[in-house]
Length: 239
Image 1: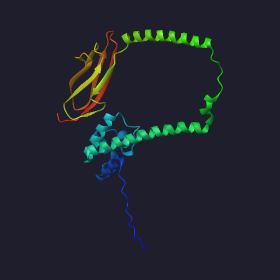
Image 2: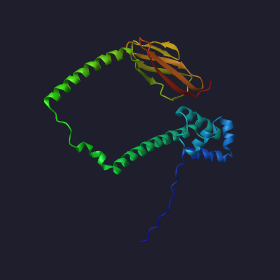
Image 3: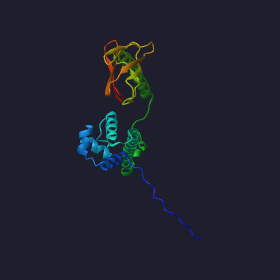
């Protein structure tokens, strides 16, 4: 019996860099021309096309670069940004995998390192040693309690930010900043005082300018010791 099999070539999906480079060459643009029109540094254009994630700056700036570059080339910005996020996850996971493999290799080259616990102990536990250890633990416990009380009074207050997320893209002119801190703290957002409820929660609406916005949140305790958080958000809207 004869079997006829047809061969089908599987089309491999192009990555972000390949899509950008192909679209640029199709429109016959040189990198120097793209740099001039988009105001994106040549170094970052090459990094985007070659997938050099370690060369690229903070995530919020990269997203802005991709948006400008894809708009200039006539590509789908959202699709290209999604590609970037997926490839960045793979890049980070691959980096962690390499570190784990190197650590495993150390134990392969020196298998005796994992057997140190099998050696005979150099001391014997006696009642005197147990009593000394208990006294020492008691002293350490008392000192730790005193240190904790002093630190609680003098330490900077806790500060949790619920929203906006770090390096979030906002499509509107305003964003609500919310979070939680010490109920007795004094809170400011961009140097403006913000009310805190009895549980330390706060909500404040912030006006954004188009582009990258820095939102500085500062919480101070009674001794004026601050905890500071700076959020970078990218606002994309028609002013």
